[in-house]
Figure 1 (cartoon, helix red, strand yellow):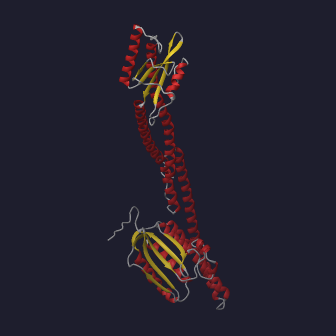
Figure 2 (tube, helix red, strand yellow; figure 1 turned 180 degrees about the vertical axis):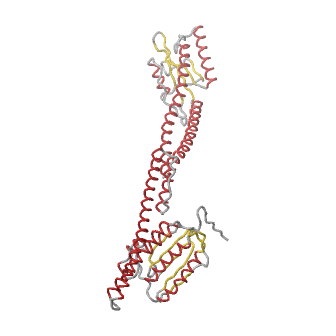
Figure 3 (cartoon, rainbow, N blue to C red; figure 1 turned 120 degrees about the vertical axis):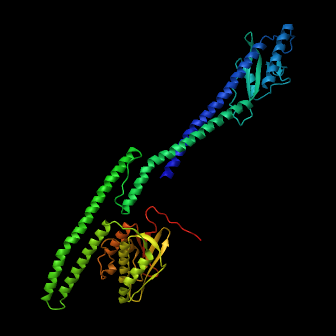
Amino acid sequence: MRTRLLPLLIVLMAGVLLALGFPLAGSLAAREQQRVVVDRIDDTARFAALAQFVTAGPTGAVGAEGNERLGTLRAELKRYHDLYGIRAGVFYRDRDAPPMAEAPGGWRLPDSGESAQAFDEALAGRRSHDPPQVWPWQRGRLTVASPVVRDGDVVAVVVTDSPTGQMRSRILHGWLVIGGGECAAMLLAVGAAFRLTGWVLRPVRVLDTATHDIATGRMQSRVAAASGPPELRRLARSFNEMADNVEQVLEQQRAFVADASHQLRNPLSALLLRIELLALELPDGHEEIASVRAEGKRLASVLDDLLDLALAEHTAADLRLTDIAELATDRVDAWLPVAEREEVGLAYTGPVAITGWADPVALSSALDAVVDNALKFTPEGAHVEVSARTEGDTVAIVVADGGPGLTEDELARIGDRFWRSGRHQNVSGSGLGLSITRALLTAGGGTIHYAPNEPCGLRVTITVPRTGPGETVTTVRT
């Protein structure tokens, strides 16, 4: 969930920063250019004020006073160009006529472009419009024109043509500062996003872990509602209340099954005793008495299995470091007489020593139930093989038989309480053995899995962890 939420927050924050950064960058560029334009306007206004006192036209004679004013204007333009590198000139209305003054010498207005457009606007008696925005990647120039007005008429135009290198450098520098600020803000935003998602999702992860623990049988797991948003803390408290109620209901259910099984044993034993006494008064081989005896014994077996199931679900596992291979070998040896009586082959194959963490008593009982089930359904002359191997951080005990096996639908239901295949109703059993096995294994962190065995039969895999709580598996390669 964090991998989905975190990119979303980062993208949203990046979008906000970009939405703020682009207008800010554009505003900075416009401000820098406007400052330059205002300076050029002031300069053209000053040159226009000097030029309006030069009374001679393009071809007229200039007196001593006119020569002095014209010389002053030309000197100012030259000094201005030398100091700032900006081309400037005062041009008569007739663009083809020699200019009143210009710097550098010989500079003329082009017939088209921004300079010509600014000149035409100034001839109309108004200052030229602001030039288009110049961006750092453009090598444009700024042209500003102001009219020279004498006696209400425009007699000439002052034009300045400025390079934009320094202005573009300042804009670029400002953009770099903005970009650095955006990057720093983005880093802070990412850090805040990590903290925010961690704060929000930490209770969710704890809740998920506790839910998994309860789903796998560790009913004592609870959620510490100490951090996170108020809604998640309230959810954690509600989850704990639900878990308490579920645990209480399950405990009542287990107690009921155990009490019922225990309480029914006494009247059932008395009933079986009365049946035996009644059988003494009937002739030998009476079919009804034999049938009643069989059903009574079957009911007693069911009650015993129910009591075992209740105890298996209630009793905590006593985990120990156990030699799984030795335990499997011992159980195979214990079932060999039964296998010989049924004329079924039974053997253990695999390493002589594999250690894992398990409750030896519970694992032995589980393995007994699986081997017993395999011997029941394996025909004469077939073989049952028990093997053990390591699989990553678990140890697997595999019991493969040569019986008829199960269909896919039957594999999905095997292990359910009181379930038996319709094809095997004539085989003795209560349908609780594998349920007890699963309860015993789950209590110790083990699992049981069923699959078809090739070419025929059923393959049951029991797994237990190789490590105890808090340990890790270390693999040494030589």
